[in-house]
Image (cartoon, rainbow, N blue to C red; front, side, top):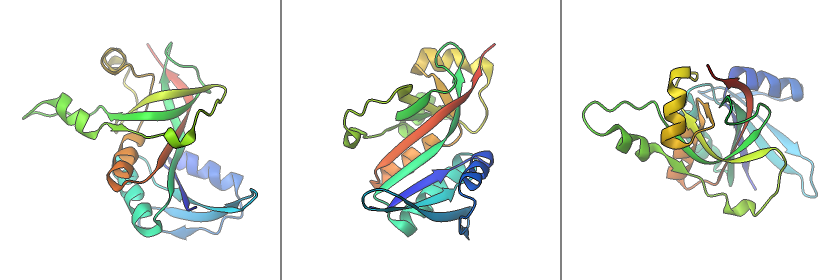
Length: 193
């Protein structure tokens, strides 16, 4: 099984390199990557990619990884900001749906454009895994940090509990390519008034 893990933010990638100090780093047009072996009954090679922050880098890295490595599973690991009062810091989110909320359509319907890029992620292959402190649901994405004034509408309109910069783009690219995807994001900070 070929597994690719995309790590987006620079700080997250630095943490990966600290956890695995002996990585043999290689370069892509989008950033560094390295392959490690996960020790299981049958050792599994896992390729770790630094994708860079934001939707553009996330989409480009996801497409590059899919085109060049043909993964059976694409995983996106990282952090996100939670909405104070909606989720707790330290919660891990298994993303079932992504939505890119910073699309402003001036000549048509913004809701239609937002729905076009929304992605439902098929997690049926995970089975009914029970994990403590895990939230399964929506993660909203935008090319910016969470703006406090946006939180009420994101909660009211979408039922959102957290946001990041990259998951929406990665999910959309994986879905378009028919690539199995798992997004796990840890809530590192809470945003509120």
